[in-house]
Length: 336
Image (tube, rainbow, N blue to C red; front, top):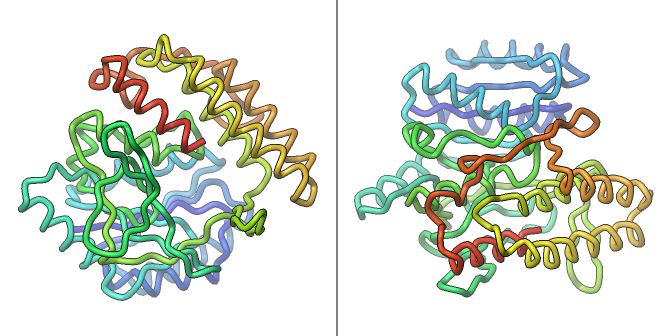
């Protein structure tokens, strides 16, 4: 059996209804976790309609926003408690194609028959606005490159959670999503943790998912920059900077400090110059840097000091020697 897990936060109900009608006949059940949305009465009304059209719709309405990772973990816990074999995550604005789930299950089955240790299979994401394929990061030895899957399956470093298919049994070994990051880099962290446990992360070109990347986009110097809300820059900056406290990277902190810090500063400057209300991005971005250095995690405005232990990070226990630590650290810097 397979359940879909969808976390909502102030969703566009038209997009949510579009997603439901595209998805509900493809899965055995749906788990909706609302993270303290302001339009909760409308969402609850939507949940009621869903339960009329599907005999297995489970809903959780959190009184406040507990973060994406924590909400996803609520869905995972329900699926495991109900002895569900698979779950597939969706963002509230992602729309699956016809037969999406059956294609994903078929791809996973083929990979498992081949003897691959599959942790997750993700679809090829298509930017809904531009129609372009979203790139994924692959590495070979010391080299890393962005690839755009067009055929078959590709083993990569991480995949976005939306549209991704998981066997629930892997969460017992790899663990759930990181609740401390709150939002941003959660899927990246999980992917590295899976690889540290000896699993592979796959993206397939046999299934597609329309996905909204950011709230808007802007062409800068011939390259498309996706624009999110200012507060997202806080989490991106903080969750990248805080990586320097990973015990596995002792001795390489200068590298992440220079590479990640430089990329974050460039991003802040570009937003400040090219985006409306750029000062807000500067404010959130700089605060993210400060909180990252101070090891503060959790939601913005209600952060807490987090003391990292040896088991808190995805690479610890597997990537022990210096060269491999440096490789993963370098790829993490690339994601910043």
